[in-house]
Structures are given as C-alpha cells and as structure tokens.
Image 1 (spheres, rainbow, N blue to C red):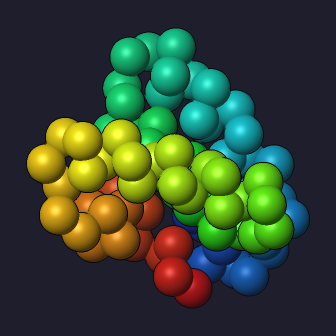
Image 2: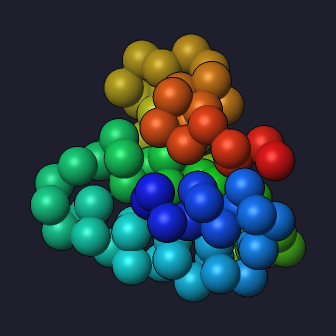
Length: 84
C-alpha cells in the first residue's frame, strides 16, 4: 500500500495498479477487510471501466455495510493520495 501510494504520488499510475493487486490479496488473506476495501476502491478508481466500477462498488458496499458513511474519506485515511 505504501509503495502504491508512492507510485501514485509520482504519477506512476501503472505501477500503482500493479502494486495494489497483491496489496488487496494480501489484506484479504490477512483478514484486514478495511485495508482491503480501501485498496480495492483505489485500484478500481485507477482501472476505470466496468472492472474498476465493480471494484469500487464492492468496496463501498462493504464499507457502508460496516456503518461507514463516507467511503471516500475513509479511503483517504488509509491512502491519502488516492485522489491524486
């Protein structure tokens, strides 16, 4: 997640995408669903298209199901450069 954030900060969005894929899988495997949702949401935003929209929707559905009112702001806590 940190490396993906650094890649985004450097506007290297291709590298950020490549780094987020194993980050999502790792957070899922480690039972860290909030981190996984934040990383999945950012990955979806970077990918765009139908696949990206599906990832964002999945992450936001999980977040709202946990009582998170603003998934964008929650994502920013874990990934401050997601809106770069």
